[in-house]
Image (cartoon, rainbow, N blue to C red; front, side, top):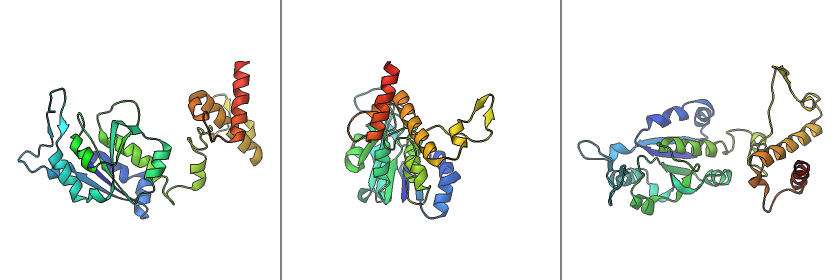
Length: 242
């Protein structure tokens, strides 16, 4: 997969692609990327990329001309274009999985009050929000999405790791422990030390349901929940109510 990211500040993004698991994915040819500076497509003397909004109001808006030239330079019209924005649909694991099926994604990193609506009308396929809050940097929200997407690609991390993560089944992840066995008086649960894999799997599933019921009970509602998980949920609710 290739990630093409359009930004006024590509330096914010560069380190992410050059370190850790992403760097290994790039080296192995699983991921390709291109960082494009929007300012390179502003042709006035000062390379201005923003202007005051029509109708008045606070802040500035990214101008359509530089963005359109930038998008055309990467042939965005034939690719899936994503614009991270607080007014978009929620970004979920399911959305990440959907985007991970694409051969290439083009991200527009917004700034200030946002981008001219005509760019959205002409180029953008997905307006996506990483949460119900506002941040200053479209680069950061883009990296959140890229990180969630690329790790789903075949060969980046093991299938086993993906299957046990939060938001599968749908459940949050179980707690993890490593050495030492005793840390400040808190001991690793005995069941994890016994080596009985079936018992460990049962314990982990119970802990996943327990944590989801506490932190995100909404995930345990609706259709499509495994019958065993449903029974655990109802038993735990009964114990809590009693």
